[in-house]
Length: 203
Length: 141
Image (cartoon, rainbow over all chains, first blue to last red; front, side, top):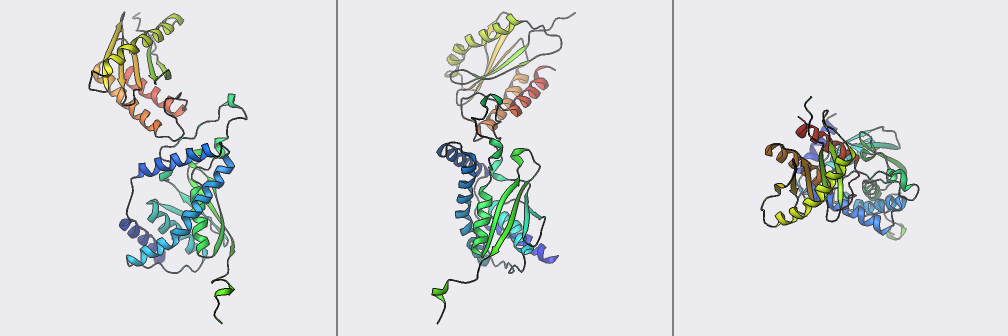
């Protein structure tokens, strides 16, 4: 009980100390990134989802060190995660809170997967997906397949890779498509071996 | 008994062509095909007057730019020269200013949508619903 309170408090404390950027600037920048990618990949929606995930991955591998470093500097101790539930809590309460300032909840926890619920998403505050009209037929892209915030999935995957957890992440519910919350499903595929490769082992 | 005025026409005009149009009709209005087409003609001819006012008048809300028969054309000009035009027969200044400000806010929010390209037709159903609600609230009371 008190552990989760500590984690939440750590998240709030880190958010208070981190430098911030204007939300609208952030949302508009991401929006123009999306339109540029749409133009580059010729509106091929599955390819675009993949690219967003890869961009997120590059961001994610740096996030873990950032989180641990910032908490060291501010004297906040984040206890080592003993099980998947604690890992999920840290991602939701500290990670999302610290980097984005949003509230994130954990749910549907099994021993190999969990869900993250985002009620507010700073990336899509101005966004409305265009409707695929009937007269476009099969030529127009199917906007319902676009995972606008797929970058989050990449970030989570990249971050957990740094702590030796190989996961698969996907958006199952999206506010832009009409659902009530954004839900990201995280499945742990395997726990990678600890430590560096054989070359680095001491004689 | 008391025949009301013709329907109020609201147009959003971009650089080259109208991007959005809607009509606000109260219960007692008479609608006929020729009236509607005439409305568009009146709006079109008012565009020159708008351009004339644009560089002399310091405000965004240009008030009434043209008077035809008993109808007036009131225009709100945005910073990017998108014209919000209203064809009506005598509404209070405050009412129209409030109407234009709310529609302008909606338009700004729409233009922040990364999927909306500037100066293209406005097809968002959400935008349409909201403009109609605002119109009903201010112009048909």
